[in-house]
Length: 317
Image 1 (cartoon, rainbow, N blue to C red):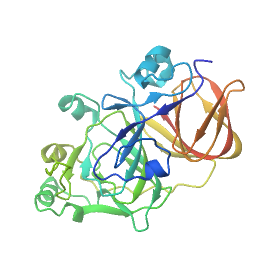
Image 2: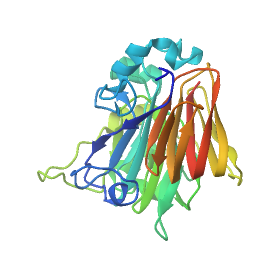
Image 3: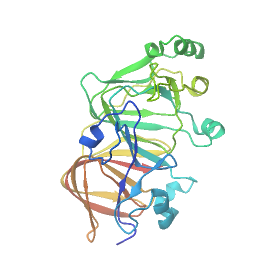
């Protein structure tokens, strides 16, 4: 088989206490883990790697697969990185996530030994009345922010946003945020696992302990400006959802036949959020269904898609 032909990945799983079961029942995730909070679909992070499950390199963790192909498989945009740049997750929030914030590259490299985290969310589905927190209602000060944390009223000054299927949230490092209960999300982010919890509803872990907070670090990195307006996401077969210095994310919809272009500038990740189908280069065929993530090495090529489906396409910048 052509070494540059797309491969399917199996994710790493996480059982955080706020998770549910929908990734198993609706997105075909095969694990006994309960609850299932996150599946790390495209991950080369030390805290959980995805694994190649098709082709000549089946069984290899993503880092070993990339090493076997050579760094050129990541594309010219990735030459500036000394690590795999992206991490893609599916998230099932049966309960509320903590209010949290992620640091910038500069702060994270100094204090945590890894890069920071800018991310984006695509709302896959949500229960009626579901909402999340996205930045502040109004510009605030460090003093007011700190007082709200200490007095247990932080959510009073945060921007609470009702959500619907198809909404997009771009979350630069420094944005205070929290996913609310009843929301399913596809998250595309920098390859980092550094999170500072600011408020956690006084919840206890499975051992009965309060989960640690990171208030001083959060105070140091939080953006205290009023949150920006959300973008209107149009309908369409190929729609740009988010673009920044780290990634480009598009939503693709197919109603029978179409193509996915690959580029030498970056690898391409396809996360299937609806439907099923096949991907082909004319010689080899790879089947997929809802919940699958495919990795396409960097190359100038195009692949034929057959089927009715929706995909989230992610590339590194």
